[in-house]
Length: 100
Image (cartoon, rainbow, N blue to C red):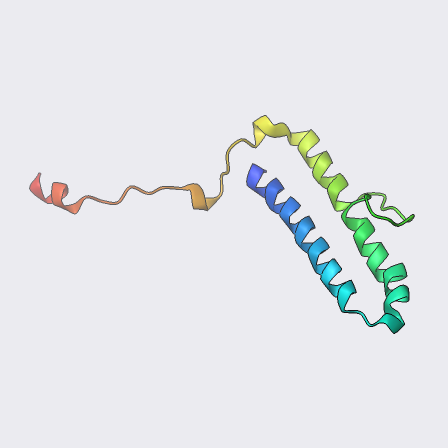
């Protein structure tokens, strides 16, 4: 079952990858920067979303996948998070069990 948490986490991952790419390209020395930006950087950024400065666009970016995912499941289907973190287990009250 898909949950809102899954979609939010997927969107967070897109942002995290984007931030890591920005950090990585910022580390590249000037002598190899242009080539790196033109090849691997542009390809990876375009795979995240098509809102980049590059002409090359992905046929299906991660952002496109998220939009499609939301359009298929909608918000009603994923209103609650069914992850194990949301399960509350009532602790046993040992005192009341002993008194009965």
